[in-house]
Length: 277
Length: 330
Image (cartoon, rainbow over all chains, first blue to last red):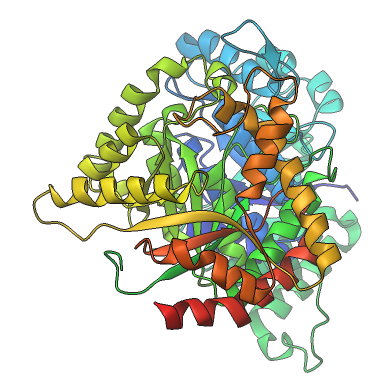
């Protein structure tokens, strides 16, 4: 068994879809929702867009952690973004995380300064009058969890960040032990489509990818047009148990979970009234 | 009456502060704000109002659009208004993107009262000077009304202003006006009249709209009334400096600015302008303000120290006893 958690990301989704994804992730027991685009190319991925989207999502979710992939472009107002993060963290009672999307190597030096200033803003922000302030409200958690997407290992070390990587990315053993590793897996045709042919084999391959990366978190990358209801159900009832369970029970558990999702929808709604959270 | 045909009644100001008066974790403050917003919506108010400052020890809300997004998704119908958003401290692009995010989930429910700001620290943390606020405000407004208007979507853009020159500017751009209630009734009449006359000079366009914000509290128990008045004075203490220093263009009459007690005297004066009492007393007290011709009132009931247990009964009395009388009188 391993403790790999399951997160979901929907690059390009508008805020309404982000919110719905958050509710579905909460409903199906997923660990985290990531808003924005780890490749920094999709629409609706501006830093100033996704943080209000996550604030709206905080209002309608309870447990799912809320992550923002931040580009920190040249025109970004770092203190404003840090404040947005603090407000979402307060509104979500400490569920906020950030993913820092590193630019190309030629732009990394100035980007790193911005990223470092943002991460440090909760303790020290120099002002025009020579005083130093800090962003308020204070974070509700003692440390803002962060991962670096792209960029060299040394950059992640300097920013105190874990890594979010695509399959096949080289990772040193030291990185895996010291900090969190998240692994992106793309479901471009949807989760149910990926599982339909041979769910057990598919999940077994996912486990191999997770093991090879030493990943603590699997980030399922979905399309904004994904079937939110069925895909999230499959993530919660098939993928999530399948990557966490003992190896010897994986095949049967995945087949049972897939049958539950795909063929037993008549049993999904309990006739008992659901207790309020 | 004013330019609009239906009076609007809102409540404010949710600033998300954890002060020395009422220290509390911000997670609880935001949760309470959502609860109070739902209550205000159920009580029938048209809008709830928030505010903005930066690098305040008490966590004064620095991100009005993100906070508004949270309250909008906590409610279903009521408008959520940033009154004000300190526009010189946000790029127009940032504001437009935030509006777009909100618009996708809660269209036609976000309102931003765009103000210039007055507190030096707000500007210093952004590496800007207070002296740049007019040019920054103007440039951002022109972008938001121009090339960024499609991205801002259905967000209502208003102006938050007190000084004559800022009020004229608001009218020049055709923006509805959120008026602070601080100041004598003659001053407020002057501000409203100035706004309307400047607005009329613009060809065509929608009619002007102006809302007045006023400190109000409705309560029948005299002990509670006395307590609320003391809390209101305490809540004005950190801000009375701004009025004493004339950054907003208005001096407090009768307050000796050189006195060691100037801050307390200023806070007492500002608190004394509140309309506090039984429903009948509040209706009487609001009479002169209603007859000014504003298009509605934002009742500032959410000030420091006022938590759900005190605010919700006040909102109930406002909704059940005061608003019907005000609507009949109008």
